[in-house]
Image (cartoon, rainbow, N blue to C red; front, side, top):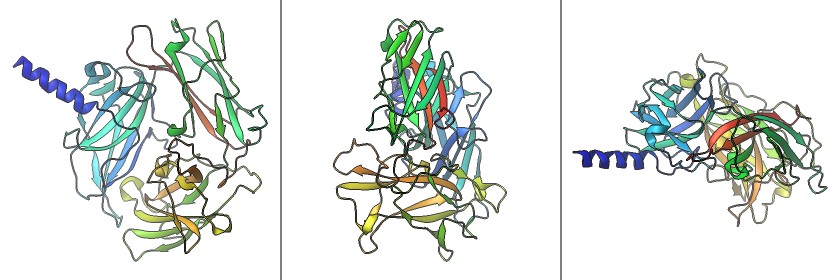
Length: 422
C-alpha cells in the first residue's frame, strides 16, 4: 500500500511540475487569458508574500458550455525553470483547485463561457517568494493543459534605486535607453555575488528581458549595476492603438465593420512606417490591453468578439528582404511567433494579420526580425523608429538564493518610468 502511495505521488509530481513555457495558450478555444493585480489591468501579476492583496484571473472558453477547469502553482527559478523544491513546500493547501466561478456569455453574438477567480485563495497559497507558473488545465488532468501565466511572489528585503538614461556610446545615443540601478543588500547574508541575480524587463516583454547582469561595482552592501552595455534597450516609439470598445460605432482607428458575419469582421486602418517621423509624446499603454466596453454593464461576460484585420504598408509597398514582420503587444503575447507573424500580401503590397479579439482597448507596435536567426531580437528601427525620448516602463527584479537554499527568492522589485526617471 505504501509503495502504491509513493508511485501515485511521484506521478502527481511529474504531471503537475513538468517543464512548460510561461504565458502560453495550449488549448484551442481558450481566449483572452489575463492575470493582473485586482482592478488594474495594466499591471504585472505581483503578489506580496503573506499579504491581503489579490490578483484577478480571467479567461474565456469558446466551446460555449461549462467545463471543469482546475489550476495549480509551480515554483520556478529566476530563469523560469522548475525549482528543485518539494511540491508540498511550495504551496500551503491543496495542489489542485477547481475554478468554480464562471458565467455563460450574454448579449454577445459569440457564445463563450467566462471563468474568473481571485488569487491566491486561502486553500492554495504560495509558501515561498519567487517566480510561480500558474497552470490551468481541464478535468483535473494536468495532461490537458489549457494555458499558463506568470505570477510573481515578492518578499521585499532590498531597496532598489533606478534611473533611465541616454547611453554614452554614440552608436546608441539617440536610439536606445540605458537602465542603471543600485541594490542595497544590507538585510541579506550574501557570501558571493553569484548567489544574486538581476533581471530587467521592458514593457512586460519577458522574451526580451536582460538577464545574467553582473554588478559593475560592489560598495559594501550596495551593488551597482551601471555597465555601459549591460542594460541597453531599443527605445522604440509610443505604441499604436485601436479602440474596439464598441462594434456599433467606428472609432478613430477603425476602417469598417462587417456585422453580417459572426463574429464581426473589423478592418483597422492601414499602418505606415513611422521611422522618418519626428518624435511626439502622447500617453500610451505600453503594450497592455484593457477589456472594456462602452455599451454593456460587465465586459467580461457581455463583451463580444470580432475578427480584427491589421495591415502594415512598407515603404514602396515592397517586403523587407530577409526579414519577418511581427505585430507586438499583449494581444499577441509580446513575442515573435506564429500568433504575431504577419503575412505579406503581394497583390496589395502590404503585410496582414487577423486576430480574434474581445471588445476592449489595444496597444501594439510593429517590429522586424531576421528570418534566418530565431534568436534575433525584435527590432522596431525600420517600422517605428527608435527615439531615446520615448516613454517606456522598466521593471527590475532582484533574486537571491541563500546558502543551502534550492531556489531563487524574489527579494526586490521596482518599476521605473523612463520619463519620470529623468
